[in-house]
Amino acid sequence: MVRLYAVVAAGGFRRHATYRAATAAGVFTNTVFGFIVAYAYTALWDVRPQLGGYDKPEALTYVWLGQALLMTCAMLGGGFEEELSERIRTGDIAVDLYRPADLQLWWLSGDLGRAAFHLLGRGVVPMALGALAFELALPASPWTWLAFLVSVLLGVVVSFALRFLVALSAFWLMDGAGAMQMAMLAGMFFSGMLLPLTLFPGLLGEVARALPWSSLLQVPADVLLGKRTGWDLAGAYAFQAGWAVALLGAGRLLQSAATRRVVVQGG
Amino acid sequence: MDSDFIELDGVEKVFDVRRRTGFLRRERREVRAVDGISFRVPRGEMVGYIGPNGAGKSTTIKMLTGILTPSGGRLRVAGIDPARERTRLAHRIGVVFGQRTTLWWDLPLRDSYRLMHRMYRIPDRRFRENLDRCVELLDLGALLEVPVRQLSLGQRMRGDIAAALLHDPEVLYLDEPTIGLDVVSKAKVRGFLRDLNAERSTTVLLTTHDLTDIEQLCRRVMVIDHGRLVYDGALAKLHEVGESERTLVVDLERELPPVTLASDLSVRVVKVEGPRQWLAFPASVSAAPLVARLAADYPLVDLSVREPDIEAVIAKMYASDPAL
Image (cartoon, rainbow over all chains, first blue to last red; front, side, top):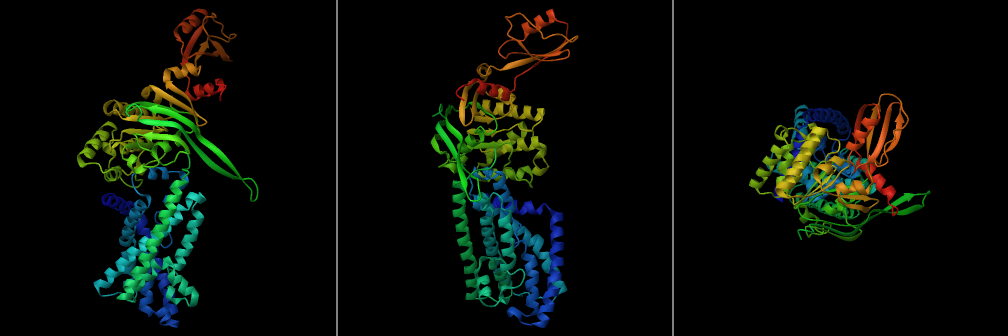
């Protein structure tokens, strides 16, 4: 069992690793955007230091982290969900369903493999370039980095669980494009990709920080910046793990409903 | 058990189709994709399952794999109810959907086989033996390290067939395994299936549009139309039942009125175009006496015989069956 899903995860890693030119282009894009957003943040924090509880190096670290995790946590989508919803639309899902394997675990394994590749292939270089060009607030302690990686792993699982729900909606909608677009907008704003969620006042801020998308960037970033330590770190993990379990459970329910009513499209 | 390896008793599949007829009004319509089918397939038999598009072939196969639940009737494969124990059954069956692939698109063929190894928990030795055998017989040696997206259709199909057989399935469902393949690839696939059936007595259920597949592989053929089994028997008899006709195309020296031959030869002229004439005669009758008579009575330049194709045979069968 475990070996099967390990092979699937390894496959997910290698599938993305085969496209080297795409990876290089992606790194370039992330870096360019990193610079643009970093200068915008610099202007903002010069006027309003300590905005959202971050000083300027922390805010710039947040920017580069956002670029580094953009693909890993698939904040704007771009993992497996187009593929899965396309398979549902064309009926290729039939092939996945007759296999002696669990659909959700199968795609989760593949997505974890993909995320691992994207962390190395799309994350490390922009982060390093950002650190060279700007003064960042990177932690010295390896424990903080380790705590951060755990939080990223949980973030990837939450991200997967959300996108799995979106992809399965294709069973009912027949075309997942609309649902995916909405998920992308929600991901862009509520993950904290545009601006840290700590900036938003009042109810909007409260709600944004409580939604699952904050697990994708806001929470891992705060762990890396040392804002969450001790029991607060345990609370951050519990928040992410709670959303992961709840959303994976919802995915399972949707999956069994979908396979029961399955009308496999086409011949 | 061995004589009823695959068992269907009055199996039905009804889809509910909703259609918008007005701003809010919807019309519900029942589509009976499979409408009470019963048959038995003994272990080790190779059966052709044919019918026009939309007849219910793929729906039947999907029920046999367990990914669709029948709306009615009883269905067993190797004693297992597919819909209820899909995963247990999956270890004992192999499936090839000709128009879909189970292989990893971006990765070399070998990676997909490694996945099958783990997925079906195939013992290492068995896996190696089966892979070596498939590689040899399906000529995959040079393709193992090639990403699947770079394979030709025929190569990919052979790759898919190998993937379906690594876990020694007792039954193999093939849905259009030769669709879109060239003559050489088709011959290769057919030869492999014949050997597989002979050596391992794997039960094979084959849907196809290509009559040659059936002729070369299956003694028994089942014809389905509108979700019902309209014929189940030997292929040779299908031509009789369908009153199928072969066509003799004759080129005469010059333009002549339609050919007339002695009445004991049941032949009729279908078409005349200049010096060329098309003559239809029953598929069960030998062409030799007909050709001899033609050559004796007419100034013959050239001739050719055209075999009936499956679509025409089946179409004629429906037309001649008042129950349909």
